[in-house]
Length: 539
Ligand code: N01
Image (spheres, helix red, strand yellow):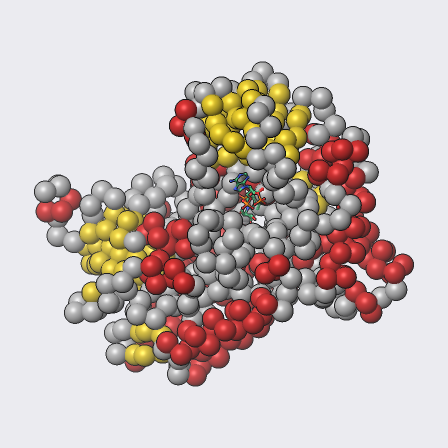
């Protein structure tokens, strides 16, 4: 018997798993508004969630601040951002700041990984167990684990035989990795790979980039931010109010027309303007039909390819990094933001290995061998192969429903949720920033505040009417799944293999994981659900 198992289990009103944006927001709101006894269990050693774990070189956010922050005045009135797209270090400082302002850590149990959670119908509570054997009962369970709680590591032959250092981007050593004078490899060219490559190519002696699919990176156009401007209270409030009206919860929206409504010259001017403004605008601030009409999509891609190819000297590299014709619908894989990514490939010590046509065969003690038989000798490898998004994290948490069934098993044939916030037979459980919500297609904190407020209102309503247990009707869950599928199937997203579709993980069901109806429509649906109250079973 472990020491912990002899201790009487703690009883809480609400247990939150994960201390990222969602967990911090809900801890604050449930304590302040409802005076609940709440704790966060966090596997890491500090607040931050994704910004605690993703501390690989060059990691920074691709949504601009000050929009990417909490809107509570206590959180921003004494805080000043330095850069428009902050790096992970600045984001960790931000979390330390909100901790000081909102006293969050006192109710967090760090280094505590939840490995199982089961609803006990007799007790009407969740029993939650950590890796160390601590058992806690809570009336409400809030897995606030985001979409990227489970890394994806391909099972290359010889993985364990490599004698150098090998790191997955999502579990980067706290003290960093020194690459000066070393030979390094980066496998994967999604948002993570691009950021690492852009940094390491400036420091390492030789950089080998293993690319399967070229990224469609957009210029970040980083800016230093003016401290005085950030003191404009009315401006800040207007920014938050505006963000609630836009498709992606961002300070800007789409061009309010379809591409075909403009002439060729007008479209070219629009693309140029969006490209010069920088950030993700050419993607999520473009014409309304960019992700719907293949012709509009192709045109934006060609515009992007023309701009990008002009920055790359070698024609062979132009074709590999920015082919004339798109390899998939533009934006169906998330475009990354870059600062001088493409210029790195003009350097003689940066080598692009095309693993689409010449895949990785295996790892050897001294490097990576490709199918052409060539051994690429390196000292350090960064694995930037992404995540088993959403469902991987749910599986790791071992959530069992009221009937004892593993939620991840139930989702083997497809994900079912109501509003991306509740799951049938998982009573009193709420899932912020998860599947079937606009999460990854919107500004994180804006979505989290909408979802978090909804959770607070549901609990408030339950407590005021004396409801002990809330569940969702299966037909409501079915209807929401259909809405998620129909909305996504109107877009070009399903035409492409990506983590948005689950198709990056062998064996995972291929289906749209997130809601593509936009934030205003999503918020309306959430409000209607709360008002009508008819999609729930209450005891
Ligand atoms: O992961 P990804 P990520 N052999 O899945 C390749 C957020 N994020 O960590 O495209 C060889 O996008 C794979 O190739 P392919 C953001 O939402 C944000 O980069 O499948 N290669 C791809 O190139 C982002 O979208 C920021 O052909 C393999 C790469 O690995 C999400 O997190 C920064 C392979 C995986 O790309 C995930 O990004 C970082 C294999 N077996 C992350 N398997 C910001 O800037 C996969 N690949 C805010």
